Structures are given as structure tokens and as C-alpha cells.
Amino acid sequence: MSSDDLAVRLAAVRAEVAAACHAAGRSPGEVTLIGVSKTHPADAVVAARRAGLGDVGENYAQEVREKALALGDVPGLRWHFIGSLQRNKVKYVVGLCEWIHTIDSAPLLAEVARVAGKRGLVQRCLVEVNVGRDPHKSGVLPEALPALLDAFGEHAGVRCEGLMTIPPLGDAAATRPHFRALRALRDQLQAPREHVTLRELSMGMSADFAEAIAEGATMIRVGTAIFGTRPARA
Image (cartoon, rainbow, N blue to C red; front, side, top):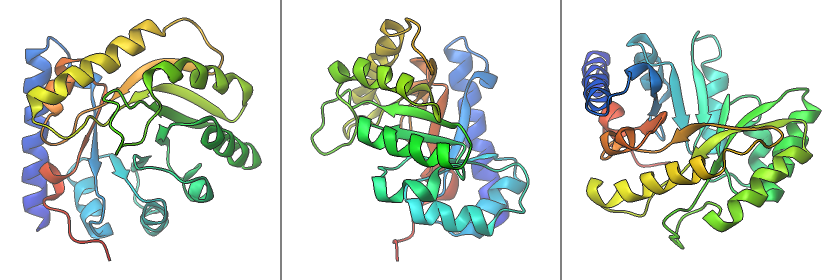
């Protein structure tokens, strides 16, 4: 895809975000658009940045490490790790990514905190919640979420700033109740906890971000609509 085509696609997505926000009575400034560049080359990220995209999401630890290091001289990029994170890959993303969206267990949290503490930083995190109870997806189950949020208080090197979900496969109408459920969980768990502020809701992708915005999303993760069909991973 040419840089011009990518810029056109990004502008179209921004227009759709603005329309969805207007329909929901919200400001577009309340929603962070994360362009998911999974398996796309670093040049595509550069083109997206030139077109005004600042937030970029990646699913694979080694891929985000390679891209972030290669593009370290590109100003204004903020990396989000949005894939399932193995504990032995934590070292690749802590500090390099401004946000980790996929904390889903106390052991993973402890390892992120350990690496962050060793590097003298505080890692911004979201907790991934499996609101659809899909056995094929990661995420803490809703009933286990309070205990995992409590665990943030045990570590100095991490902060939980919100929740994230990936609904089971389905059309936009089918995914919307899962977005509503995540927002309800956030609202139910607003009691103060140490190192926890549930400001963010990361939910919605290319096919259903309008529905996610209607249900309160503050971060949407859009790949295909911006970068096109993903190339096969080598």
C-alpha cells in the first residue's frame, strides 16, 4: 500500500470515529485511536506517523521490540502491546511500550513489576478481561478481576489504568453486549485501590469500533481498516 493510500484510509477511520463519537454524545478527543501494525513492515508505521497516527499497537513481543528499536528516531510514536504476553517475553516490552493492555494473571503482573523495578520505571498497564468467557481467548474472568486489581497494590513498578477486552468472534451487534459488560465492570470496581485508576476502556477493532465507542471505549485498536489486510507472518 502506498503512503497516500494509507493516509486516505487513516483519514476515513478518523472520520468514522468522529461520527461515532457524535452519535454517542462524546468528543473525539475522548478516544485514542491505536493503529495495529501487526505483521506490517516498519515502513508502514512510518507512513502512518507521517499521516498523523501517534499510537501504534503490536501483538508480538519480539516484533514490537524490533520495530520500536528500528524506529527509535521517529518522534511521537507511542507503542502499545496488545497481544498475549508470555512471562519470558516481558523483558522485550516493559519500558519500550508505553502501555501493556494484556495483564491477565498475578504471575504475569509480578514479572512485569519485577522488570519495571529493575529498570527504574513504572509500567502503565490495562487488565484484560474475558467477559465472553471464551475458552479460546486470554483474560481474567470477571469474578477474578477484583483480586487481580488488588494485586497491583503489592508492586511499586506497575499501575493499572483501565480494562481491555476482546469479545468472541461475531458481528458488531453480537460484540456490543461484551463492551457494555466491560464498562459495567469498570463502573462497579471504582472503589479506590492502590496503584489502580480505571480510566481507560480498550475495546473495539476495525469491524466494531463504533459500537465500542457507543459503550464508552477510550481506546480502540484498528488494524485492517488502516493498514489493510495483514501479510502472512514469516
